[in-house]
Length: 365
Image 1 (tube, rainbow, N blue to C red):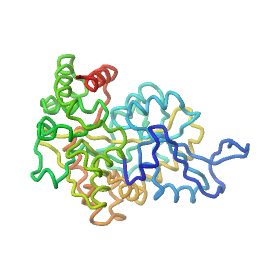
Image 2: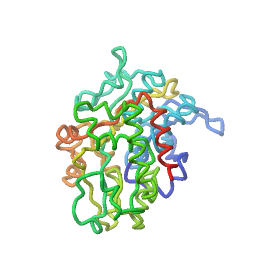
Image 3: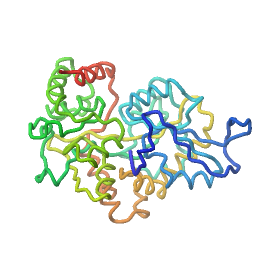
Image 4: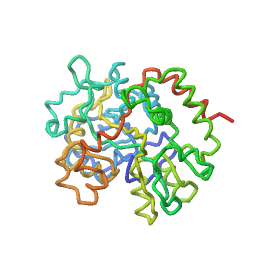
């Protein structure tokens, strides 16, 4: 999620290999030629293997970073179950999947005392969903909101509610993320999380039925359910949509191209994601994985990650490496204040049911 060249992303399973001259000093695996290749295999969101910070890591550690991208939390789970530690070393799940992976023994314990930047990571983002039996299984990396993004050349006044999606004036001109997080949005519109933030992640059958009804009402109004961030960028770039649920990178990338996109958090609030870095159970390159996590959570690594994605940092020392524009755009100097405005994705125990409802919404007449 990110300053990306997404046109090179082919479907959801593209593996991007970032290469350089092979040096020494990393754990290795056999390459096709039979020689030892020193590699780190990532399964991450788009942008979390940007060359702005992978190349420096490769040079310093004499290795190659291989990145496979996933598009949703369910896509991550499917790829991880298919490959596991034989294929991947480090993953970057959001809050609705991180706890599931911990509870199901799919990730390794992390000795945070070996991470030189651990104590610099803000305590407010060290969430308990990646802790079990006193052990820690995930390291905070970057986070951000599910904004309401709109074309300010078309929509002159800032929208105040998610109900803009039900406005007939924008029929065929809206886009939603192809994910169960839309159900969370309905829960927020109903005020379910006003007193209990977990309520939208544990909705009853009656509440899910209500969410299905409301989302089905606008199914025909959706121009496209986007899967990758690049798809949403293209929809706005081609002026196919006027308003959408989106991430900060879309506003950044399109405005850099001369567009006038804006974002807002509606009165009902918004959800968001706290992405963690985790080591896959049975990963072959654990030492290198630890070095990677230490690098991308360092002040410089965090600043480079923010610049590539326009997501928010967890290490506030990164501000020393960020210019004023980047700090303001990512709310890096007001982490706790902005953090408090977002209901971050959490583990959905009945995720299968949420997915069933979402499929029913997309197939509604």
